[in-house]
Length: 116
Image 1 (tube, rainbow, N blue to C red):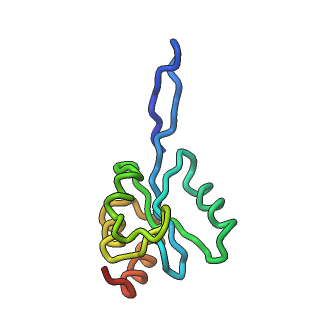
Image 2: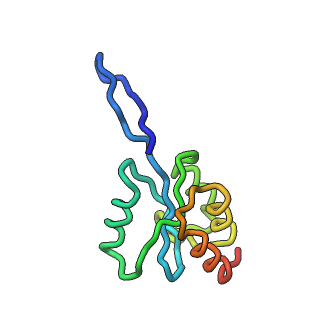
Image 3: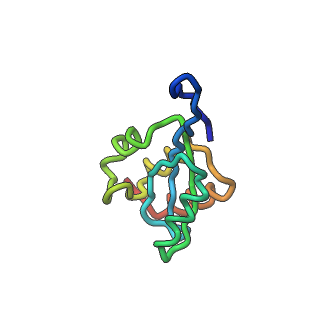
């Protein structure tokens, strides 16, 4: 997580730069595109609390804003921050986002069953 230095009065203040994350159930299904200024693992934990399916982080980026990604993938928006796992979206995550070690298997498995 990167930090930005902001001026607050005469003293610099640190503000965490948002990280955009991609979360999906291990079994596949919709992809959540969200952002957090905290650790992504903590955000995953809070989402997991309200979800019966095991969720995993399939990618993260700090190069693109959440708003940009929501607009880019608007065609596949289901509701709010949840998107249909189209091949376009999954391939973009694979090509442009930092992937946790287990995400390659998840993306490959999801790609088999999805078409744009």
